[in-house]
Amino acid sequence: MKKMITLYEKGAHSWRVVARDPARPNHLIDTNEYLISHGDATLLTDPGGQEVFPAVFAAIAEGWDPRKINTLFSSHQDPDVISSLALWLDFNPAIKCHTSWLWCSFIPHFGGDEGTLVPIPDEGCGIEVGGFMLQAVPAHFLHSSGNFHLFDADAGILFTGDVGAALQPPEAPLFVENFSEHIKLAEGFHKRWMGSAAAKNDWCHRARALKPTMLCPQHGAIYRGDDVMRFIDWFEALEVGVLRKAKH
Amino acid sequence: MSSVNGLTVVVALNEAAKDMREHSFQVRIRALDALVRSAKQQSSGLAGFREVSHQMRRWSDDLGTQLESLQKLCGESVVRESQFRTMLRKRRLMERAAQLSPAGALEHCLAATSTRDAKLRTTRLAELHRTIVELEALTQLGLMAIVLSHTAMIEAAGAGNRERAVLSQVAREFGEHANSVLRIGKRLVPLARTAREAA
Ligand SMILES: [Fe+2]
Ligand SMILES: [Fe+2]
Image (cartoon, rainbow over the protein chains, first blue to last red):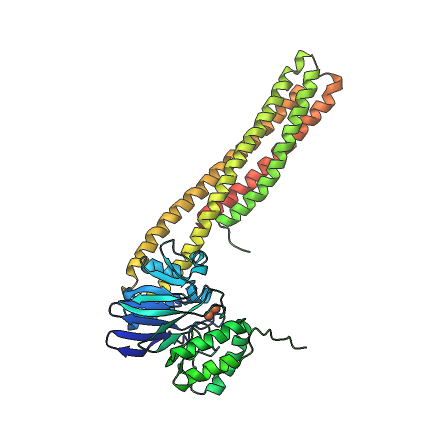
């Protein structure tokens, strides 16, 4: 079963991650779900695909109160990000889901109605959780054409969706331990998934200026300390939009 | 082989409807042809045949109405079957989540799911039942047409030498179309019954 681990806690403000499911079938990509809580309200980032809903919900119910989740943040429209929406709405029909305006008429194919989705404009905006303001940071074309990351200025944590993602086994450590080894597991993914060099460089400038202390991707280990800037530098230097040639 | 369900019935019905529409069309053409031929004859002995031709046309109309009604039912069944499959999937995931989670965490979801599930099952059963009734009506239509084709044969026998062969041919062809429709109906009724039992 997935585990919930606390990443940051200060008073009523906290970040938790639901990660690493050893029982997950191999044909499903592993995902990290982050719970950002302030007071009695909780936001869940990229709640995951519908097949992983049981594992995600169970882990949250064990370590937290899922009834506190009143907001979802969907970095983009992929099924591994938000296809569990209908199940979350079954649990709590009042849940709102913030996502790029671009996907507001696409994501309802997974569930919800005209009142469920809250559009984020291209330039980003604040998203309120229990009176605390998180910032939706533009990350368009990384990899989705309408894509946002989420920054918490108090905690210094940046949720980066598919940016920073690495394809790792479930027993892998939660935090990056050896950057040069870890990044090998991220390279192919970033070269292929991230299609725009201009968007990537733009994001690198923006992310560097935020000075995050933790960079939390939707897949794979979390970057912290010096590894955050190491990742941004590596990403800036990476050639993206590369289709690997077939071996003959 | 995949098990029989509402979608299997819908696919079979749609395929059969294509065949039946063709039979209906051919009967209509034949009925018109027979009407024209009998109108040319002044003989009062052909009045009965004219009546049979009218009935053939009416039968073709009835078959068309019956097919339309089945088509509508097919559309509704596809919607219901899709809802049912989605519901089964959601229920499986919700039950799994409840099993893994602390007791009571998802009780209200499971209760709501059960209510929706029961409603959907009832509607789905009612629709399958209606399909069976419509298919039985179709079978009856086939039977009626066979009787009608026999009457047409008798009427043709009373025609003059020149028309007898042609009109007998019309009656025989009508009989063949009627038999085809009856066969299709008889094939589909058990399929729909199996789907209803499986539901
Ligand atoms: Fe994605
Ligand atoms: Fe992803």
